[in-house]
Length: 148
Image (tube, rainbow, N blue to C red; front, side, top):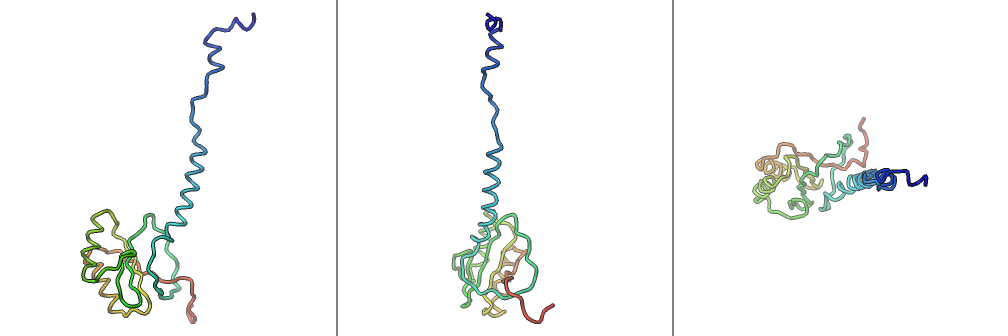
């Protein structure tokens, strides 16, 4: 009768289930997903095929949020993300997009064959839409000869 000397509470205490949630596996999965999205997100931002000018400038750190991208192809056509847009409507469409939650940062991707005047027209439209932080995208993979 040694086992019967224990009170009912003591017996329940030994057999009670552990109700704590182990969050370690959840944290591990979330960190893996975070890394996967950090690697794939920059690859999804561009959709228009442009031959970017070459540059030896250092690469900027990746932004915390995906900025809006405006592209100029070799024929001078303007695209917002992947959607072709007439240059006359660029300011109005960008202004409408910025009111829906995009930040004030924008990437301008211009083909190296586009003339400087066309790039300046687009930069003027970006300024009219309220963008003050415009990043000009170049191709950092090529080292130019004759530079130090």
